[in-house]
Amino acid sequence: MYLGIDLGTSGVKVVVIDEQQHLVAQATVSLKVSRPNELWSEQEPEHWWQATNAAMAKLKRSYSSTLMQVKSIGLSGQMHGATVLDQNNKVLRPAILWNDGRSEKQCIEIEQKVKNVHNITGNLVMPGFTAPKLLWLHQHENALFNKINKVLLPKDYLRFLMTGDFASDLSDSAGTLWLDVEKRQWSTEMLSACHLNESQMPALFEGTEITSLLSKDVADNWGMKRVPVAAGAGDNAAGAAGIGVVNQGDAFLSLGTSGVYFVANDAYRPNPTGALHTFCHCFENRWHQMSVILSAASCLSWVTNLTGAKSEAELLAEVAKLDFNIPCEVTFLPYLSGERTPHNNPHAKGVFFGLSHTTNRAVLCRAVLEGVAYAFADGQQALIDAGTVINQVSVIGGGSRSQLWGKILASTLNKTLVYRKDSDVGPAFGAANLARLAISDEAVSDVCIAGEVINVIEPDPELVQQCSEGLALYRNLYQSLKPHFSNI
Image (cartoon, rainbow, N blue to C red; front, top):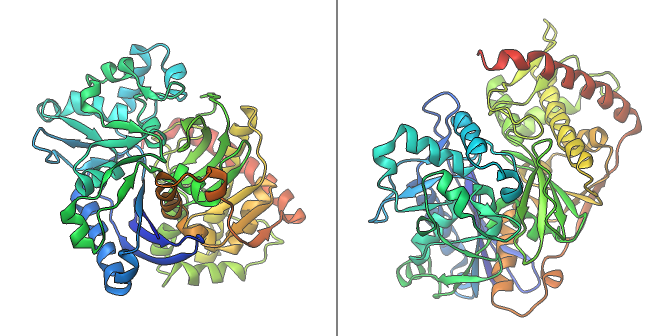
């Protein structure tokens, strides 16, 4: 048995898989995001640990004998979050999350300080990354900044509480902007630009390496043995490990809180044009590219709450009754938290365009589904423009449960989408796979395999044309509104 823990933005998910890679047990506990100011997005690290323990307690109540058979643990987590600790290992402030947009000015400063930043990091400097967040703290909370002894990514704070060690993996650390992504090591130059040094960073490991053992106290509390803890991965690389997106050209779409279009590469091929990310994969000598939209399935949750629908499923059922032979009268820009690929614009805002007296909540939801698909299409175009080869595309994340959304996505992207068993637990499943690889001599290709196909959605020829026209309007709307976003 192998255990995977995924610290997401909306919740902590824990899974146990067996030697045949069957999902044996799972538990989830929700988390909330705090937005104390415009563009801010924060969470209390203490809540991560409370949710993790609550999820493990759920498993212990129903699967106590299974937990005692677990051989190793892997970690996955939301990327880019800045968790800062003092010399007594106490958290100094709420963690600043990946979708926080306060540090735009600091991004410009880093670009000016480090002329070859794109070559070192493989990325543009964006507010979502960890580095500009720390420069913001240096400038706006300097007394607190001077107390910082360690900076940890969210999942690595869990690791510290689980093991007592400061460690991280390369895929997650690549998203800090402090990593030399090609050399797979900390960059002194990038750290210095943020008034930091390597002693304040965790030790680096490949995703399949063991970082430490579970502490006795935590093991006893969870009803487990003191098993090894693997380095693990950032949530997207872990998702790839969960569904076999390992080799050149393998790809997936992740419909989580954010949206990710992920493509695996066998070499370091940075191309920041179009706001693409180039990061280390969670396997040795492998990398990946991805386009990122900051609001994906979270848009569906938002419109469900906004319109008073009882559930997302109920609202999707209403959308399914609409006539899709007729183009949607409303266009939605899904920039509820700003945007990364391809716009790199933290000021971008969500927009409904085309409202009338006949607009109902089903139409609004359809516009949301299409708007997120259009955002993915922008990301796909950025990948294609960079020369990226995209082969088969799998779908993971909570939003993958909607077949209607899949039809819209397939037609908008003009790509065949493959849905696999247990795809909604991809990152946690991938973390468990990395835990297995950490204690075995098995090859990556033998463990990180594509799961059982449960559905394939082909582009609908009629919808392809309709979505193409909708995408053109969507793009024109963004360009027209762009000058006004920063004034709102």
